[in-house]
Length: 465
Image (cartoon, one colour):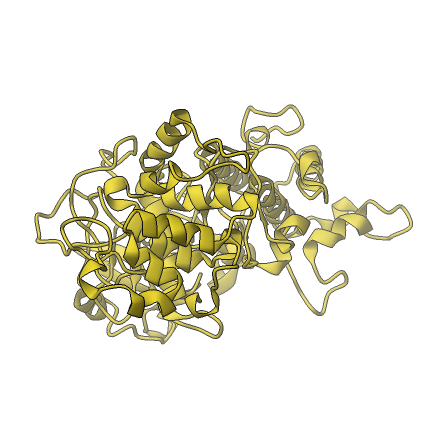
């Protein structure tokens, strides 16, 4: 990406991977502070006060990068790469200079190209070796029993993952427990469970624990470097956020051909497959569906309360454990917001699943209200047992069925829309769920409810039972 960057490029237009590489250079030793105190307003006053500096300095405790957040905030002022490069030069941060403008490398003495910390460690893009076990991140839940204790194995020094303890599993061990990533379905005697975000998922047993191994593999339009961005994001998110309705993480692997994330095996698979009764699974009862919807809402509320936006909420990413407790999964697209749940950010790359995407998400906006929109589609799936999209169905997208149900001139009614496989449905409760789904699916994001309003006991419009 950096080959297309010039001095006139706006900071806000830098790619995510390039900003990630800059943060790998400037976050260690807090070198970003040398930049923030150099930024001025057009009238010559300093743009950032000491209060701002303290706020940015506290971001790592929330699992965020001060450099990335600084670039995002400063980038709203139409600042350019040229301005940033001048500041980097003035502070002898020359590795960052050549990262942004490689053409300047020949003009800089090689011995001055230190990438930041005095130790001489190189903070490159997204490494294939991670971890520097320096203890748990302050303010996180790293002391929880959900995170494996330090194995005391010598860990490689690594760029993005500093200050946390988590088990790194050798890639060769994953090859062994998945029979060399056997692509035959589990039902045919293989190990492949299905497709996950940016890769395939395989079944295995690690230290006598059944696990699901997600192997991130490059596909069309997604490079290995971009996959490592998703890998980094998912591990960072699951390291910091712990909740009964979020999937846990057993460990990860980054010393082999492909990065992998390891989770406990969810014995009941995904909500999508359960609603379709795949492989002869029994239909979900109304009570089970309400419990799954409630758990998903509580998981989203936890994410949003901790200033994270999932960006790919869908029934395929809601996994069910042996008790059919809902676990939100697949955090490769998750984005941390700098100022809380009302914040809307912009992204150049549109990501997510079309059948679940809110109007603003299609324009590149990142907001918790987009997750709420997607949750509305999931509620319609729970009510109907239908997939979110079907090219042979009219309307093709399930989100559009509300227009038909609410139109008195159409034959489809809510009663006719409900999944006939449910024998214990309470119609009055189903009406409440449908009303909530319609509220979540409002085109205007400010008209949708907050995640706090869709969980148990948090709204008068719905009673889970």
